[in-house]
Length: 86
Image (spheres, rainbow, N blue to C red):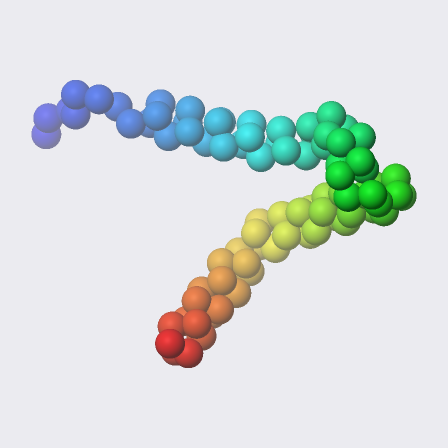
């Protein structure tokens, strides 16, 4: 069997690294946008910090479900139900 000219494994790893960097960057960069978000929405510091804390908590809980493979089953069921409703 002939080897392919281009090995896609490095492309897949680089893509995964980029996606992970962007995903983590959105959580880490929250402090940079804290004051502009306060000014734009007019929320209190506690409300804005609470919303961000809730987002991190939900992401952590969903990470556990993804690790156990339950989100995939739920997503497939919801997709199937949406297909039936059409």
